[in-house]
Length: 83
Ligand SMILES: [Zn+2]
View: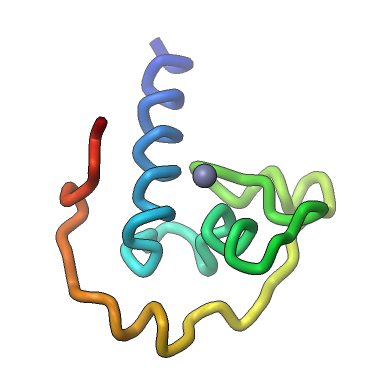
């Protein structure tokens, strides 16, 4: 049951970071969004949480919140493309 809930949460967190990264309030920096935005092929592998990047030493903090993110329209937590 825990694995199923974690898989669903990971899927949600992944899509949220692609579509609306500023809403990912439970991480200081949305690691998956930053992973793609800055082409970090050796850092920030997390999807749902950033703990594992801290554990394995792959966490890399960057100043990610730019005009690009701030100028996006505000949308709700569930306004995602589910399929
Ligand atoms: Zn992705």
